[in-house]
Image (tube, rainbow, N blue to C red):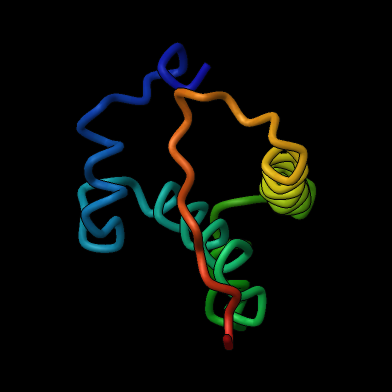
Length: 99
């Protein structure tokens, strides 16, 4: 679906190689920063990030993004726990923040 909406391989590379210094839009960078904070350490949703989010997104959009990331994270953990992840899907172990 992301490709249908215009996501290119070059953009994916920019995200992986350090999106904050990339040519991505500030809106995209802010959405990725929120995702990083939720996945890595929810305490990273600093007042500065909250300000950036409100510059680019409405409250309902922020809630939708946050819930979407949380639901995808939860589903992936359940599938892995049950041994149901697709074989072709690589698994990356991310340490728990603070461990």
